[in-house]
Image (cartoon, rainbow, N blue to C red; front, side, top):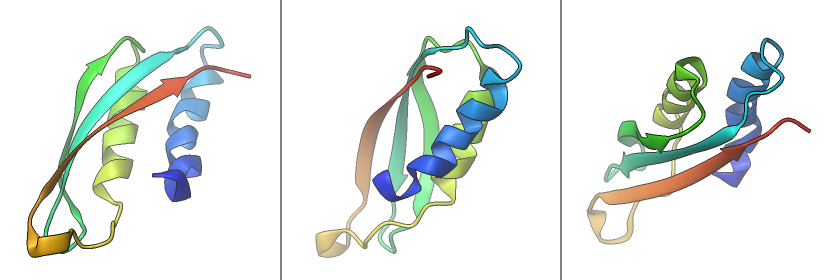
Length: 86
């Protein structure tokens, strides 16, 4: 996630230019498949109140590649993102 944080921040920065008061937390849930790709991703919970940021975040997660899981199984990840303008 840290290697792709700038791509995720971009989703937020694009919308905060239109609404400077935009802030909140999005908890994502995604599955890393046997080959390291993200096979599914969704918003588990959010108080950000920005569907555009949430959709962009999910699209970005779906494009990521992770190391192949050990043992060849799937890995379910729950990851929180906190957004606030600086």
